[in-house]
Amino acid sequence: MSEQSTLRVAVLTVSDGVAAGVREDASGELIEDWVRQRGYQVSERTLVPDETGPIANALIRLCDEGTCDLLLTTGGTGLTPRDVTPEATQAVLERTAPGIAEAIRLEGLRNTPRAALGRGVAGVRGSTLVVNLPGSPGGVSDGLGVLAVFVDHAVDLVRGRFTSHD
Image 1 (cartoon, rainbow, N blue to C red):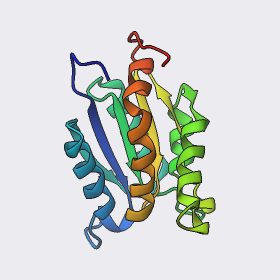
Image 2 (cartoon, rainbow, N blue to C red; image 1 turned 180 degrees about the vertical axis):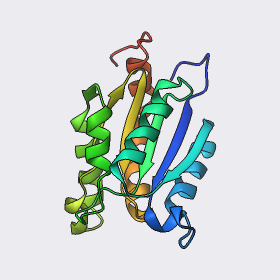
Image 3 (cartoon, helix red, strand yellow; image 1 turned 30 degrees about the vertical axis):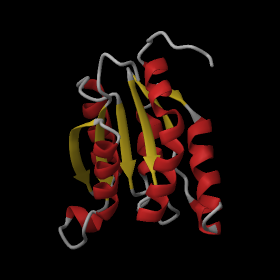
């Protein structure tokens, strides 16, 4: 990310349990802590149940408002019938970035074979980079570790900022 501005990050938690108030949003908290520790700004933190319409609507709103450079989702990326975050995300993306999702799964596989069950996707809508992270704190931690290596550069590219190819 260029030195003139601070990366603005929106966090979208997708969870029936969290939306109903019966489960704590540990993964959302973990993302918010990571954002702040890196000196980034949390532009918004919101949650929706595991339903395609609300997920897609939240993604569209967050991207199209122009208030975030990076939109991280957590939850809804598994194999249960209610895990529809990847489908909702794919429906609103303009361009995909499959290497990001592949790198997150690969890192997760170093810690658990269950990471292969994750279906998260990544891509761009407008000038926002969107990345689906798993719902578990461990999966989120793995994903954030991957993103830490290149997210500033990726956002600069999405935003059309000059970058070196070092």
